[in-house]
Length: 125
Image: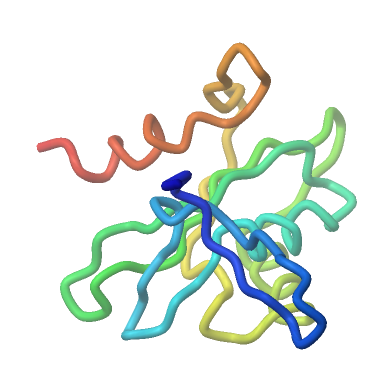
C-alpha cells in the first residue's frame, strides 16, 4: 500500500509517521521534515498558523521557508521566529526565511494548509 507517508519503526516495533514524502525538504543533502519545523514555529506565542515549504535555491537545492499568520494583536519579526526555532531544533532545519502574512493561508475543506499552492508561488515563472 502506497500512502505517501514517511515514518520509522522503533526498537519495540511501533510505527511513527513523520510527515508526507512530498513535504520533505532536502537542503544541502539533509532531509528536513516540514512538520518538525512547523511544530517549532507553532510553539511561539505570536504564531496563529504556519506552513513550511522548500524554496528552490541554486546552492542548497532547497532552503527551508516558513509562511506564518500571526495571532490578532501579536507581533514577531522574521529574526525572532528563526531564533525561536534555533532554540528548539537543529540549525540546518531552521527556516532561512519567513514570510509573515496578513492574509490567511490557503486551506482545504478539512482545514489543512494547501502546501502545494504555497510551493507553486516559488516554482511558477
